[in-house]
Length: 180
Image (cartoon, rainbow, N blue to C red; front, side, top):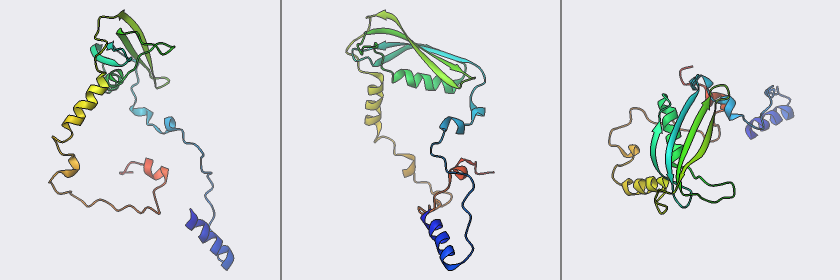
């Protein structure tokens, strides 16, 4: 931006031809929902639910069972959300027990509504470790078992393109697919 302004200023000072500024104003905020390709979203309502156990901290300690929505990406996203959930009352207290988490996707609004219902108080281990904590511990233990893909021995088919830090691509260029 500074280089363009300096070029315009130099053109005015030397009497040269000035370059016109772009006619579209630069937006102050970007609506991320508008940029998402809605064509990839499902066209029908989706519903999945999970029966989970909650420990004394309000963390989901385990998923007991679940009902499939019929759309695997939605199932994976809602299952991951259920594993990471904290369930507490409005006054931030915890009721240890079994809960039903339901996820409803509305294609008209492209939003997911989550609902929590207490199925039964107690009947679970209140000292159980949270499922998200368990997953993080497994990842820490297995971190050195398999090297990351970047350290693979196979040679790269093409050298990586160099990036000019002074000239990063504009948002419209980034949003276009490579073939178009």
